[in-house]
Amino acid sequence: MMDKKTFIFAGLAVALVIAAMAPFIASSNPDGLESAFFGIFGAKEIQGSDLNEDAAGSAEEEVTAITSNEFSFASPFPDYSIEGLSKFGEAAAVIIGTLLVLGIALGLSRVIAARQG
Amino acid sequence: MHIPDAFIPLPQAAVYWIIALIFIALSLRWARKELSDEKIPLVAILAAGIFAIQAVNIPIPWGTSGHMMGAALAAIVLGSPFAAVFILTLVLIVQGVLFGDGGLTVMGANIINMGVIGGFFGYYSYRGFYPIFKSPYAPAFIAGWLSLFIAALACAVEMAMAGTFPLGLGLFSMGLYHAVIGIIEGGITAFAIYLIATARPDIMADSTGVPT
Image (cartoon, rainbow over all chains, first blue to last red; front, side):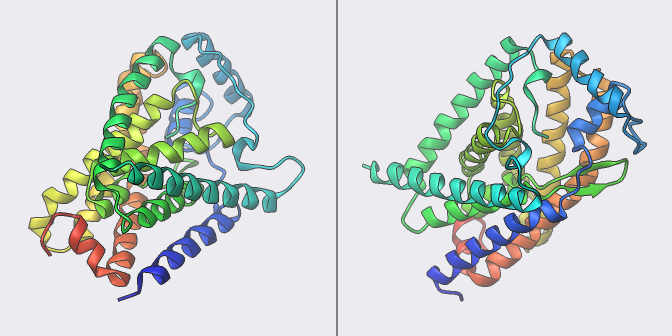
C-alpha cells in the first residue's frame, strides 16, 4: 500500500500531467450539447460531421432571441486561452485552473472541518 | 454539457439556481460532518483531477466530442452523492468565472445536471450494482455511463422547457451523443477506481459503505 503522502503527491502529479497535455490532445469538435444545438438549428446534420460556420453564428443569434438571455461576461481566460499565447498558453491556463481548484477545495474543506463541533 | 447563458431564459435560470443552492447547502452539511483530516486531501486531489480531465475533449462520431464529468467518481470514492455536488460546484464555478466554460446565470442548471444528477445516479447505481458483480469495476463503469447519460437527458428536458430544443429531437441527439461519451465516463471512472484501489485499498474499503 502506498503511504498517504506519496498517494497525494501521485494524485497531484496525475492531475497536473493531464492539465498540461489537455490542450494538445483535446478535440476541438463541438461537445455533445453544442453539437445537438447546431444540429437542431440547422448548422450541421445531427448524424453528420460538417459544421456550417455561418449557420452556427446565426444559430447563436436565434437562440438568444428565443430565450432573451443576453447576459454576457468577459472571462479572463476565455476557452482556456491566454491572450497572445498559443497552445502553451492554454496548457498554462488549464494548469492554473487545476491548481486554483486544488487550493480552493483544500482551503474551503479546512475551514469547514475547523468548524466541526 | 456546460449550458451557456443564452440557452435558458433568466426566470427559469433563477429557479435552477434556487434548487442548486438547496443541494449546495446539503453538500456543505455533508462536508461539515464527513470531512476529516484523512479525507480533505482526497477531496482536493479529486477536485483538481476532475477539473483537469474535463479539459480533455475526446472525439466521438458525428463531428462531436465529449469529456469526462467526474461526478460518479467523486461520489463513489468519497462515499456520498453530496461529495459530487461539493466538488462539481467548485469545478463549475472556476470554469464559468475564469474560463467562460458554462454560463453564470445558468450555472444552477449545470450544477443540478453534473453535480446533483451525476452524483446521485452515479452513487446509487454503483451501490445497486455492486452486490451483483461483487467487484468495483463493472459497477463503476455502469455508474459512470448512467450518470452522464441521465444528466444529458435532464439537460435536453431543460432545453425543451427553455424553448431552445424541441423535446423529441433534443432527447434523441443528446441521448445519442452522450450514450457514446458515457463510454468514456464509465471507462475512466472504472480505471481511476482501479488506480485508487491498487494504491490505497483502505480508501475503497471504507468509504463506499459496501463490504468488499
